[in-house]
Amino acid sequence: MGSRSGSTNGSSQRPKPRSAVPDVLAVGLRVVFCGINPGRVSDAARAHFANPRNDFWRLLYAARFTSRLYEPVEQFEVLKEGIGITNAAYRTTAGSGDLRSGDFDVARIERVAREFRPEWIGFVGKEAYRGLFGERPDLGVQSRRLGPTRLFVLPSTSPANAAVPWRERLRWFHELAGRASGLPMRHAVRAIVVDPDRRLLLLHYANEFDSWWIPPGGGIDPGESDEQALRRELREELGLEEFEIGPLLWESSRYFTLDAAFCGQSNRNYLVRVPAMEARVISEADDARWFTLEEVQALPDHPHDLENLVKSASDW
Image (cartoon, rainbow, N blue to C red; front, top):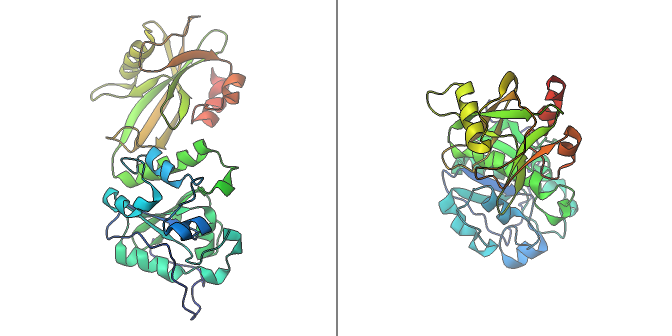
């Protein structure tokens, strides 16, 4: 799809005021992040996302966009990580609600895409995108492109967006990081392990940024069939040798860059029936536990593919 702006924003002949917060741009970046406009704290610091309560810099690191946690004053250092930063509007305000439509300059963003040729522009908040293009987006990949540059909308990282929890923000940053990585997707199998009481066995993992429960399973090694991979993974993770492999329940993919060699994982999820047994961990997981479906749904760090997991329950 070719470039199309579909907006008259930025068509005024009045020049837009320059910002105290400089653009962080270079040619050929992986992602240019586009915030909505500088707040008072960023204006005073002359740095993007400088409010210490803003999660932007922590999310960059947590999603593996950057190799370490940067401070706002180090903003030009992220260019070497393939990252740039700009804003949809230059004018500093106490809050984004104080902006006017004329503050947004779509022609400038089109010029950034044309002259600097980033692979992606990631809009940090729906309002940054809507202010420029005059339409309300969903989160994620947009159908609109600016030439070859693809567009992605992320949740706002502002402390004013506290209704969107950290885990949800991180999920979207992970997706953009995976899509922009240029790496292949890992093919994997997962076992929906169910006992005679229709309880579900999950493993727990955590790092410094997130924690999650997940069905056992993992990547398919070269030359392995799905069944061979399932049997190997269940033996390695749970010590299981005897079990019944049932039908393929669903397939799903998720982008993330926790593995440096892949942009994410494509899972084929199979029903596996086992006799009554104790949940135990013999792998790198930190816990294993049986759950009823209702208990799984109530988990604060429930499996990322919870919706499909719930839908599959009628086949257990």
